[in-house]
Length: 576
Image (cartoon, rainbow, N blue to C red; front, side, top):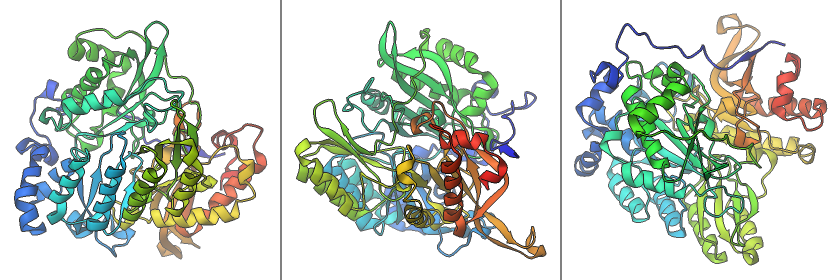
């Protein structure tokens, strides 16, 4: 068969004969426009101008370096102007693509959202965001249609319940992924909540860490389901038990996807709960001081790790940033169960946590407010968001379980989702994103409905979900390279010829990635998906393709064989 690896050419070592913008090696001279505006004024400082000038004087008062740069440090991006088709995405300048409204990203950092917090999130959606709210695969809430005049009031409401947008975007330490069942799961190895809280207390918004080479993503879990997709974060602390030192964390570094995907690597050290904040701080400062700043597309931590290797990274971390050696440590055990936590599960206190699936992360003001009411009605505690666009409610008493699960259905949530409602994710797509080429959210909702009908006969026979992830552009916000079936949006040519000049017609479609996965999604270890040469599917035929390939898998698989294992062995014809 003709199957090719999805990963672009190998990560290359930057040239040694010129400055790569490493602060500790080359000095702090700004080598591109982004580094120049960051040097002129730290992005964290733009909040004061938003509150005192821009919210008062309106959109037209915002200068370009703040609008398209520093606003990101507070979770704000201009959204896409309606009516611009995907074929023009790469042809237009940012100011031609953008509307006078913003996407706003709210970080949750694995926190438990009380009914009061859910109501505040719901009120912001209703009052300022035209009812929109999406749960992202980074445990964030994203709003759309935000006007600059309303941003200070939104911040006031968020901060009244302990939430914020501080460094939710930009070249910063973005929102942290934390286990959604931290502190309550009966089988938890270690509760990561104290680590996340201490990191935030010491360093969130600290100007010393708000000018990094690029974004920096963090994940911390102590649950054996490996529920924070640790293999694709810049740093991850994963719960393990050291044979002599007890529970603690295994350190992983250097993962990310986008157009140059790379899974993170174990550094090989054991980190105690007390050491974890300092280790996190050390890794961030390595990135700040040694990360490559000259080229934006080579500036993520994964490029430095590819150049250094894990042994040198560990040596620099211990000698230059910690001042002590870390003991060798064990790797995490294979994941136990799926990390989305959908369904009903016992807690260690005799209560239950219940994981529920919206449609591709979509919730709104009414849903969030209704969930707050339902939590109070049954006497539950709070909700957490997941890295799979789901929500988990904690502390549901046994006597209220049936009423709670039934109540979720009336809110458009479900603890008993179909195979593809549970396993499908989608990024924002062309509806709001300036980078997108195709629609994703509405397309995914339609595909789920089709597959629920078409594959109802197969669902009882499949022993695990088959992930279907839709992304509107190559940047992989919806993790297409690590899905069973990942769809990358692009304009494709269909018809009698290979191009528009040969009778072909250009339409929205997807390039197909197959057989990826992460440990927390039922795999023994993370693996990037693969592409079948030339396999592209029109957006209108996604359900047809998924049905065809899943039925082929169901017919040909051997006992216990996962979809990804079947893909690795299938011939090209079977994957078409």
